[in-house]
Image (tube, rainbow, N blue to C red; front, side, top):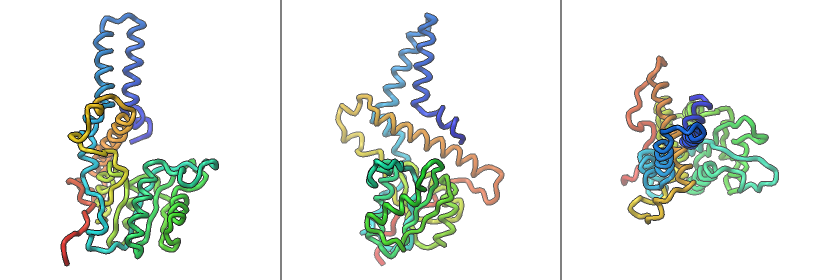
Length: 272
């Protein structure tokens, strides 16, 4: 899905277009203005209310459980951390350079490595306009957090999830591996790994769903910028799944229909 389409179809842009339309109709003294204004306000409330947004997030973020290393009976050979984003402004300390999505992914990947130091820690992803490559930044951050440099492997060429899956599947050679990415991004990532023949254990992180709706109070029904941000991310991932479905069902060799999330497993907790 091309960048302009992703941008124009986000909830924030839809709200801005509705607001602009309301202003234009007000300027023209259009008789349908009250109805449009009411619809716009109702949509804004729906788009920025946590309990309603969470219902859209749940199918994505709870598709896989968090990786519990202590209960896993299978040692890992690889831990793969998909790239997200960072800033390389010189005034920022190392700990402030990763965006929240990258900070969560890096933290989870490094946590798993400290529990299973025999594994290789893989970093992937490329951002075009950064002075320091994303994978080099991730490597530098991991070393600062105590990861052995000879246990780090970087994949600097992939620029999207599909390319990351291709590169990483070739690298792990069907050995036991964990895949670390944002929980909302995990279903789409798993579908790509399945498409390229990789079976990896899901290790989701960066959860936007923090508590079940029944556990939060009345204040959660008030509009919030955080809920709007979460909805935008969920909308982006759902659009990505639609795009992925079209790509997988297109005239491509070895195309398979995604059924559920076959590319990722959950840790084996059965006794030996």
